[in-house]
Image (cartoon, rainbow, N blue to C red):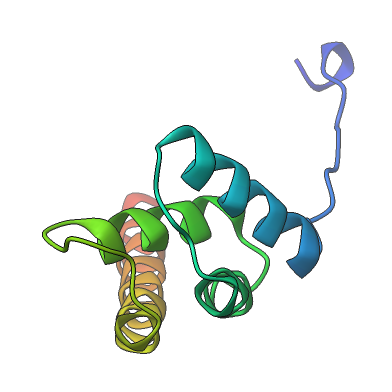
Amino acid sequence: MRSRCLCVRVRAPEVGEVRDVLAAVAKKESLTLPDALADRLAAASNRDLRRALLSMEVSRSGRPCLDVVQVGAHAAGAHAATAQEKSRLLAAHRISRL
């Protein structure tokens, strides 16, 4: 099977590229995305575009406008959730190998 597959490695986007994608999505969704918020989301996501988009979505849900203050708390929670998920997957993998 391995001989039939091609391994492709894709680099993580730069912080500026993440910020540009967030701005483009916000424009398509008719949202006003402050530059400070775009910068903070891009930096807090650790160059993970999916995480940045999800953080932007969460920061918008239930609020009339996007806000810079709420991003720091969400980013910290997302990082903790990611660590918990990695631990859970590692434990499941160890059990499956038994």
